[in-house]
Image 1: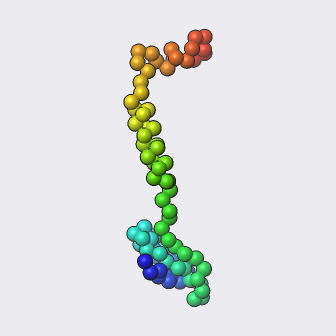
Image 2: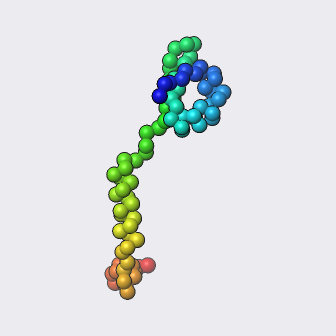
Image 3: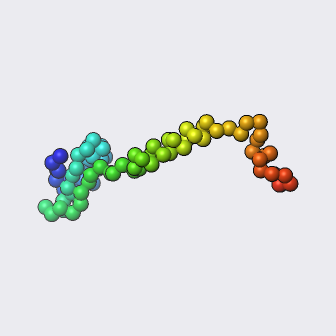
Length: 82
């Protein structure tokens, strides 16, 4: 996608609108006195999909496990202070 150039003053004045456009995939080069000084682009995904899959599987496993007739206090052992 082609990058648009935006002056620093305009970027500061219209930051909310620029961020909304960046969320939809646009990229901007921010300039000061006609010279490129920064790039505004969408953030990388926060987690690797394999990590998200592993977390989902662990949550499913946790939901499927139960202690049966025992409770956590019985499993903790005798003579323990509450």
